[in-house]
Length: 417
Ligand SMILES: *Cc1c(COP(=O)(O)O)cnc(C)c1O
Image (cartoon, rainbow, N blue to C red; front, side):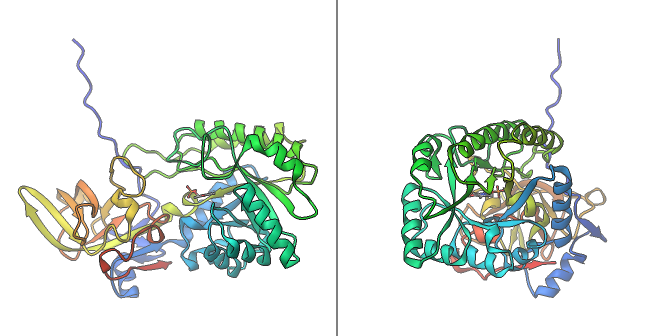
């Protein structure tokens, strides 16, 4: 008789990119209690500059030199962080007029800023043309609108065409292309659009082929890159003007949930090298841009809140904290997840777990809703009122992606250290 092996409980990826001091988490050279004293209270998000810089350096070394990195500001639009990114990436991708103004004021040159997003209105397009950034147009109406507004302003608009490819990014956390989508223009419509596009009226700078987000499967990303380069070559051959860049999208994910592993870049990079060589002639003098959000900043940020109550209800222990869903919607499981899973979580002032006795706890926030979960059934060092809870992997889609006014709780702080 064969005995089945004990099933291993999947674990979170190690959060050992941060250092510690006396069992306490250190961010930007300061312990969490020092950061609290600096700010004056909890909850807060803290982002570590040196970790962001180190991560980007590692990525640049791994990728072929020809690939230019852009930062997608919507992942984390905290102004100090955006300003910090100027020296570390070649361009910014924005998804609203407010993000565009932030990008412009950061010192990033206008010709390295692109503006994507469906539903841009007249004001958005007018501002983009005046700013001199590149509109990533998402429909024929939008192209025509840009042409008309440009004519009225007496400025020739810079545009790129966002393409909705026929393929999709497999195993992706968020599919943004393939099939019927509100994003971009279906690739099969492009031959006639490109044929009719008047180059006297617009500068067509490039194509934007973004297939999806949060992917941890190297093979799926490589497959996407192969299809993206093949499509890029077809599109370039359809236009008579000289294209400046192809934005091949991003999609690189980070591990959030138990069982997920960090992407290994070797194969992805080797595959990109092969593709750059294969399409060298078609893409001569054309920049290749990769746009990333969470991969650049997600791992360098934490969300910190404090235990304000500890109670037992019919055998289950609850740590009630001063922060929760209203600051960190994605950690609560209400930002696109089908089944709620825990982000990596710890007691930030009791990090050497071996030395401590542990207990099974549920960590919740202060909101009067059962949705306000910070962590469900986790084994953590025995903790008390006043201890700090840290949610890792929180540098992207945190503060700006959360309903901060919900239940009118006090606001939170952010700090880049
Ligand atoms: C959201 C978005 C990104 C960033 O996605 P990440 O998963 O954070 O890397 C990049 N490009 C476009 C067009 C987006 O909409």
